[in-house]
Image 1 (cartoon, rainbow over the protein chains, first blue to last red):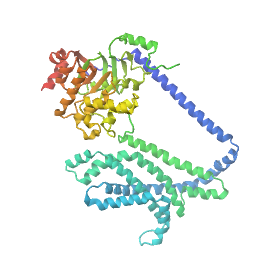
Image 2 (image 1 turned 45 degrees about the vertical axis):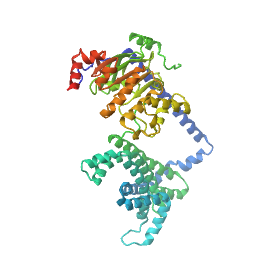
Image 3 (image 1 turned 180 degrees about the vertical axis):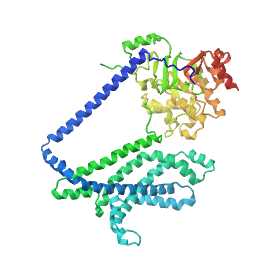
Image 4 (image 1 turned 135 degrees about the horizontal axis):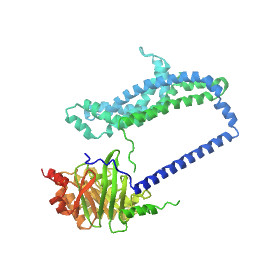
Length: 287
Length: 267
């Protein structure tokens, strides 16, 4: 409770000079930084544009008419990527969280759970994603299990979920273990059960810490969702490939690349904002 | 324009002189220091001087600005107005190399802030090796000598987490002291300790004072302030309300607020 509010405070002469100096320095740094950036971009751009093969490259990769004509097909393929990614992301979070919790339960009774979790992570982190897609994509339907679809899309998604869950489970496990044990003790001391403590105390804190690495995996998944194209599913990249095959103009690939960026960049900004709102502070402080 | 750090521009120097000549013997002097966090004014127009060998104790309620004042002196916070001079130089000047200034001060925190990934010796010798360019061998011997002085030579290879609070705080003091700082800043160094561990840290500080270490500290230990301080400053609402010998400020306070604060402590 301030006894007198000093609304009448005016910065002293020293402070005004310091503020001026800092302002001048900020402006100067900004000018130098943007100047050097522009210069670098100009030099790189100039080198590319003035190269002898530039006209050919421009025709092959940056043909506006080709971009417009291939856009609908690529966009339709991208819509498949988005659906695959959204569905897989939900399943991956569920599966990997289960694995992570299995791996962090202590005590001899839970040994089989830990063993299964560890074996799962070891195997699916060890196998290349493409290999898992081939194995499941061609082997899965061949099993002709009743009740399971035989579509390439289904088995492709299954491969993505299985492979990615192994990585994301490790991210979750690191997050869970980063919550200080005193938090668990405090939860249990209130009479909360192990599960309640995990659900209400540990996981919310772990979640906040793993948002940045999870985001990284999600962006990666967005692009790897295109790998199921090897099973014959038409996604954005496959669609671009088909368009390209018409006249060997590679512009559709550039269109697909731009569209992928349009997906991931806003998602990154959104995650940043969400994390800030949740009170996640990255490396903070001005020192 | 050639930037020469640690020297004031002519106009800034004249401004300094209005606030007192920086070339006097004060080890540290604060003039008109102000610090805000947003709309919250934490320090307003604080003046303070410390002579070499002095022990100045800040007292006051939580939130009165004691810790912020120490952090401003250590340049962990940038002041919003006023001048702080240390060893005759204006350290609030924007050209000043803060790392260099901090290398001549020692700071000890309430929560010890030891590095958990280093053992005790690693904590104590880190600044010697990285900042002061001392070789590994000499750093070890100086670190060991300092640990002996705080009575923890046997714990040189223990991890901070395996030590008691009092031991951790003594390591933190050793870490700050091993570089021979001209000024020690101690921020509520006993507040996180169990009562029976407070004594070992305060005894160490009393020894340091006897050895002539200059200290600026804040504490809630009024008995310690009375015994060791050369000067006690009472802070309230970001202002120094009363300042003087401990027996005067603590025994016969002149200000109503000081009396109110001290009477709350006794009940």
